[in-house]
Image 1 (tube, rainbow, N blue to C red):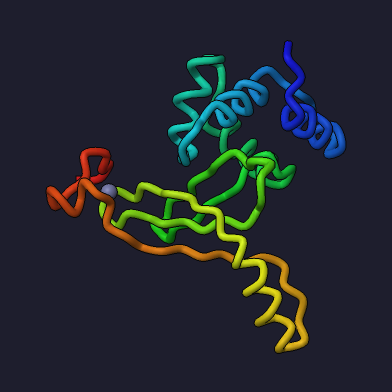
Image 2: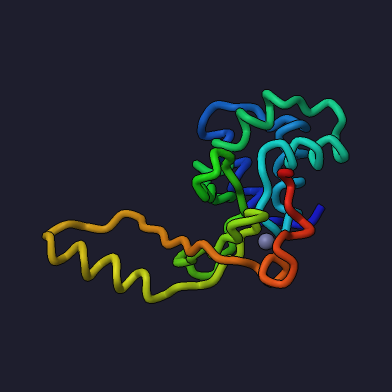
Length: 155
Ligand SMILES: [Zn+2]
């Protein structure tokens, strides 16, 4: 087994919470970290089951918050009612999302100016910034050309 720092981080978090490191939890973890794009809980369930077919929907929904609390995943809320997740990269945490209004495809861009912006506006009010987010709604290239996106999930 290769040493994956976020896998160790996740296992340490489970131990700290008094939770067992089960094969199902590790299958969910491995499936999540293998994703290059944002994914939903249901997509994660499908992928985790290809690793371990005993993974249940309930375990996925219970494991997702453990992965966000241990900072191996980030939750991305685009206001569609469904939550998206992405593995936390080690590079800067200041990212902004550009979301296609048709297919909900999420593009991430690094946005170092946000840190400056957040601390500047907070300091004006005498406050300390904790977190912030920036989301831009956009039309992806396929949508602009064809009026709909091939990767659109909803009809
Ligand atoms: Zn699109």
